[in-house]
Image (spheres, rainbow, N blue to C red):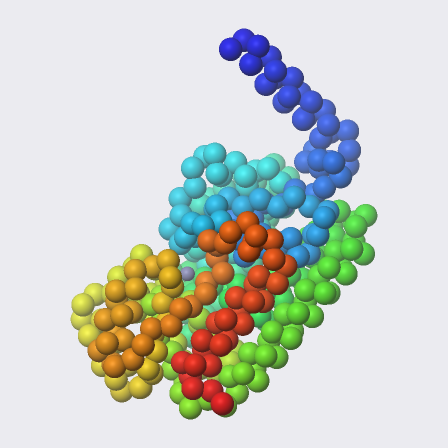
Length: 307
Ligand SMILES: [Zn+2]
């Protein structure tokens, strides 16, 4: 036990010494350390940072970010970097709580929802009310570009020596996101239907950008369940508007989506949240986000009967 403590102490001392000797207290082996709240931000940060940073997430890949309550051990990841990135709009209320402390320790904090125009998850109208806002701001190729630019600029100011690389990495990924946006525009430009129903409100930014309407069964979080009278109302609305497909997430309980689908004589379709649940191989795929978004595009083209 004693020996353990001694070795542990020596390791801590070495880490502290090693850290302090280079360009800042957090830089290890010349790499910037970035912590993110959850997978999509980790993925965006990796695209921009390339080999120049280590990126860790507080919410483990595979767990639903909605209503996630990190243990102190998980939370310590947020304190481990020079830059902490989170999405906001009430997706990670714990991050709002630790933000002042992070900033007082000199950790730079980037809250993405402060930099985009938020839309209500239910009405699709602009909103400042965080209890109403759709938090899925990563599921939009244009808002994703904004987030990549913000990560690029933060990294340049933290690690100016690698500024050219950050600019280059970001430019490559931004080009791919622009192509994705163009594909959504053309893919959804002439469709017979204009309404989709989702198990939980996640496509409001896509709906707003590409001109369709979104209804949701369970609101902003997959754990929320509709009141029976709201569900009956949704069935009526769906029968009137005529969509044939109900989107649902594999991870969430498909029962309500299946019930609704049978009520309207329709079918269910998978939707992709891209918020985690990937194998290490999938997570390492640089085109993961683009591939998953194209799956969503294909499903939307089926649901909206696009030509
Ligand atoms: Zn969600």
